[in-house]
Amino acid sequence: MPRLMLTDATWNVLSKVMHLSGRIYNKPEHRKTLEGILYKMRTGIPWRDLPSYFGCWSAIYRRFNLWSKKGILNELFRALSRDADMDWVFIDGSIVRAHQHSCGARTADNESIGKSRGGNSTKIHLAVDSGGLPVYYELSCGNTHDIVHAESLVANCPTSNVVVADKGYDSEKLREFIRDNSATPVIPRKGNSLVGNEDIDWCMYKYRHLVENAFGRIKQYRGIATRYEKLERNYHSMLALAFTMMWLPMWTD
Image 1 (tube, one colour):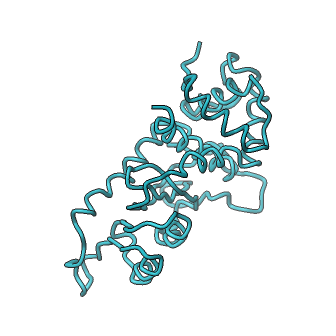
Image 2 (cartoon, rainbow, N blue to C red; image 1 turned 60 degrees about the horizontal axis):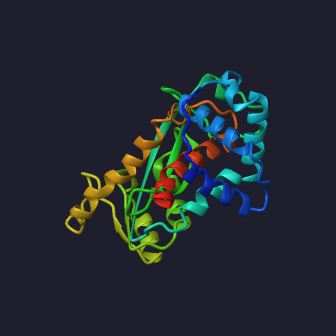
C-alpha cells in the first residue's frame, strides 16, 4: 500500500471546503482521488505509473484536470489562507526547472516556460504572511525578473503594515507603490546606490528567511521542484495543493 498524506481530520476539512464550493459533488471516492494527486505531486511520477490503489490513473488525471479547469484546488488554498496574519508580508521569486515532458503544449501561449542557458524553467512569485504561510502567488517564465511581478503580489495580498523583499526588488517606484498601499517597504538598496540603507529596519529584514523557508517546504515535493505539467493552469493547481498542505495543520491542530 502506498504512503498516504491525508488523515481523517485533514480530509474532513478539505471535503467540507470542496463541498461548500458548490461545484463538486460529495462522493466517497474523492478521497482516494485526492490522495492519488498528492502521491503524484510528492513523487513526480508519470500519471500512468500511479499505483492501482488510487484507482484508474486516467480517471484520476481527468478529475485533476477538471478540478484545475474549475479552479477547485485554488479555492481550497484561498479558503484555508483567508485567516492569514497580514501584519508583515515577505515576497520573493524562485526558479524551478521544467522537464522536457512539460514542454511542447499545443497552445498559443508559452505556458510560463522560458528558455535560458540553464534550460527551460518556470519562476514562482510568492508572498507569505507573518508566519511564513503562503497568501498569494503567480507564475512566469523562468527568465522573468522578480520585480516584474512585485506590484501584482503587493496589490493582490490583503492590506499589511510592512512589505519585506531583497535587493532584487530595489526600485523607488515599487517603494512608492507599497507606501500608496498603506505599508512600509523594507527593501535594501544595492551597493552602488547613492542613498544608502540607513533607513532600513535590519531587524525586520532578518525575518525574510520565512519566504525562503516556504519555497524549501514545497520543493520537498518532486512534482513541484521540477515542473512536469504542460499547462500553466495545471502546474498552478499543483502549487495550490502544495500550499494547501502547508495550511492544513492550522485548521486541524
